Image (cartoon, rainbow, N blue to C red; front, side):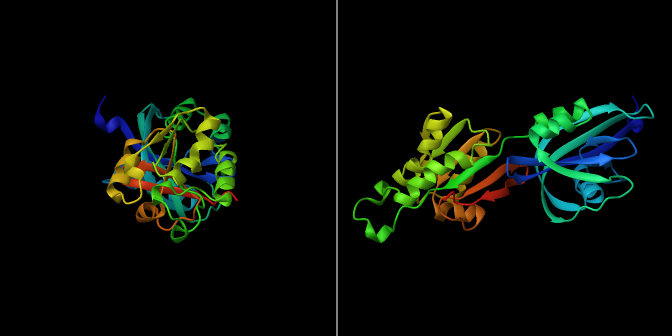
Length: 271
């Protein structure tokens, strides 16, 4: 097939943290009466990533940052040409949806709702390619360092921190968790031990998450966990350099994209 007969297109799967876990954005096109992802044909000289960002903004009003690369789809368009659509995840950062003639509705829904709502099998294959987010937890409340006489590595959670650890199990219930990885410090291990127990997985300890580790070591570990459904527990000073200030017991929901770590949203301390 001649290259000129192929149609280059790109789009994205915008996603954010919703009340039931991760939510994705679908659009309805009245011309076709279908539900799909925002996408469109590339303009002359435009790269696929540029096309994806522009098309999402044109169809949904949202502008954002692309994250992980997703499976492409290929099919025949209504003119019989081969159409190849490249996709990424996207974190929406600004904008507001306004209905128009091309897209009259945009709806946030859970991934399962999206699987049921999508009009095309090829779009479901793209959705199946979404990487599970990384759940990055700062350990729960552990009292004041200056009031602890022993080795700080052994400082435990206080009463509030133990309640937070138990409540974290309920808070993260909508998310898939296949691995739980923690700093070896007691206050971190105790923050996610109930979660590991509830998910029937072994709690793994990683020195890269210990207090005093280099931020690049933490980032490298998170990069190694990309694509896995993992909950990770670490310390404020190290996590702050990657995600900014985090409250004790809070969770950053993130993914590892082509540009590195991308924060998708936050969950407050589960008091």
